[in-house]
Image (cartoon, rainbow, N blue to C red):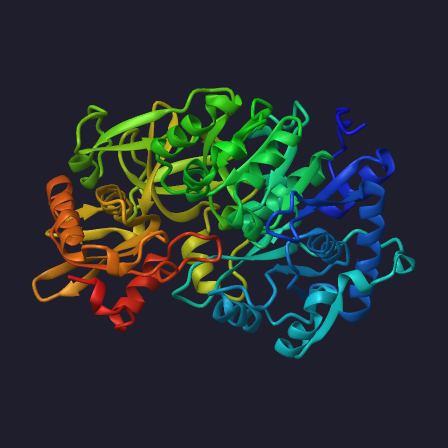
Length: 567
């Protein structure tokens, strides 16, 4: 039954209207499945909602929320990953309230951010589950509703929501007051349609398989919004279950026809290195249609390592889809299309530092290897001079700006920042640097992360790639390069975690530091002022799992890192 192609849905204004449509058109089709892993050796316990059952749960919880808050009030979602999260989010929208996707208390390293977001959003109601009810009530002095305690009998029909804003997507930055992007009902429906079209899911049915957190923009749109708009099955698992055993994600990809999924860069490298030959036995990945990598920038080497690791399981190279997006544009902006070869660009590092994307030999040690992020997904993308705003020609590096129906309304209660970022001309100033070559968008880095030494620009991720390739004790994708003010100009510092399989006492730190300094000096012409090797888990990450260079720099300046791993 679930392999039948779902009929096309008419255009609706909001996600809950799509849920109700599918509940009437295909009531017994599976809508959402959550795969729980209650024990370390668990192969997964499946819980499923059909479209009819999802519609009942959404209307029941929406009715309960409508009793507690006026239209337009904020509702914070402090649910764990699972079906209750999906239900709570859609019910909030159905009740005409504004959802604030978050997570339960206790998420490692995210307590301060959770407190800051709650203070900024000022929700009237908090949604959670019975399991987290006590700790949420202790944290929040507000009405708390446990999704799984609302009976089906509470379900009633609700008029479509009148409000414009569907939810606040808080950005994952860690150095300033969290900014909540106002995502309208029209924004999320438009971006879901754009993503479906970009990855071919509008013409052919797919199964969305994901472990990305539902409070993160890509997890929310790819695992909830897009399946709801198209009437597709969405299969979810917990991020922690993936981290404990990455083969679980691959098994879900193999178990579902025409699987489409997304993950950050580190996850592909993690699978390539951690999944054993025994776990690969009987694993077939020839049915996977698209694997999205939304890291910035996307490096071809990661796709190559993943492909080499799983080609024997039938994985097709053309499934890799480097993509670009950000919360201010709901999420998706541009994407490489499945079924097409990965576009690779070798660029001259010196020219790139001067704002020009000039070709280099791929085997040149001073070349920067980047992947193309495809073409815009139903929106306009421009490369402009960050200072003057003038449009730049192909091959010139500048700020990426975006215009489209998916661009959010602005930041919640932050008028000045909204004017600066969203402007008055309809163009979103992303703060990301990039260029266009051969029709492909290439993301080169973040404007605010640029390191300037002796008047030359250096991309931190470029320095980090050199460092992690220099010595096997450096943990991949768990290091940060940044600049700090010095007496004679900007000094460059690297803070890197060592691998979990090696203790600091077993590492010849002075030799490692000498090797790192020599490699960075030879490849980039940069002298590192300080290299610190720190324990695993020490380098802070954003809520989306990326290393936070800004917060690492802040902690370094505060003296938070011990000197015994430094030189």
